[in-house]
Length: 443
Image 1: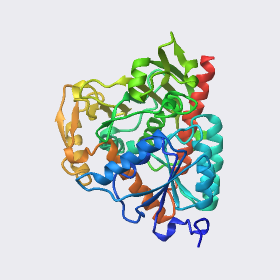
Image 2 (image 1 turned 180 degrees about the horizontal axis):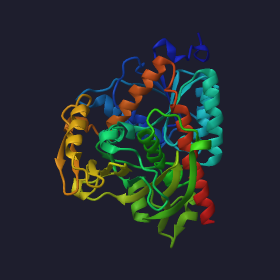
Image 3 (image 1 turned 180 degrees about the vertical axis):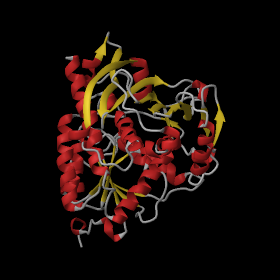
């Protein structure tokens, strides 16, 4: 039997990964551990070069580590026809995509056309034209009974999980307020850093990472995590219809300056490539598309999301997350600043004078302990903070394994939850429509 005629259905219980053009370290992180039901042989198709070498080096690092080494066997094809070769050979049934986003939506579409499931890193669309193609691709995936899913690691972070849980407690949280455009009831902000460590080593980013036509603007890239959390936390397991439930009121983008020396340290390139020079001021300052904000309503609730990039985190710090959900009885607020030791910390702040709030909180935490044993509270100046056992704080890189585990279960069940596809569409509509509005406003 030749490779092109192999059964590519994942329903047989044997998942075989194809990695396509891995230009982002997230492609390797889904292989940081082994999984039951996945063939250890992975076929990689890429044009060759430094990005592929960096990907293979990470896989090699995981295979050779002393504790719990992985056993991946990478079968690599390089050549200018890598995409066509992958589509014709079909040496697997799940395509993993994490890299340059310029062609990602097209890659996803062609993989679905070829009868392959897709696990795609965010973002799966970086502009509104991509969104329209993605919408058509989801329709084809449904017809072919294929699973197209994106990697949303922030759903696995413990403070996000507990914020979601507590927001569903009417006794403690009350109801989510509607808010106003000047006082949104939901605010999420993330700060990422260009200079960072991955698996213990300084990350080298490709130069194209700083090109918005290849990586995407911040609100259409990392901003998708924020939009996803808003939907997932505020309306859990509910279907969102982007045509009816979402209204974008305003959005904006603004640059984050990066010096040539900083750019060189991050990319190992001594000069800005030609395609970035349109964003360079004074010959040495790159105006990255690193910041963006969207103000919108979701089911009539006013929301603000802010995605930002900076050069380097302060000592002891890393990517940070801020989130507040405003309820009629309490606010649930996640902070990750210096006061928290740069660790995400969830605060519960009562609204108004509630004599019985402490008793209500105690009862809520007791119920919470049935699923999250060991979680307690500590009094603060204006409320309480959750004290979360260290065992739940597994780190961002481990969250990729949790996403993969969920996806494997979906493959086994041969379906995603009913709300996932419409909510992915709602997410990418919000991000790309918000970007379109912001771009129009800056012209």
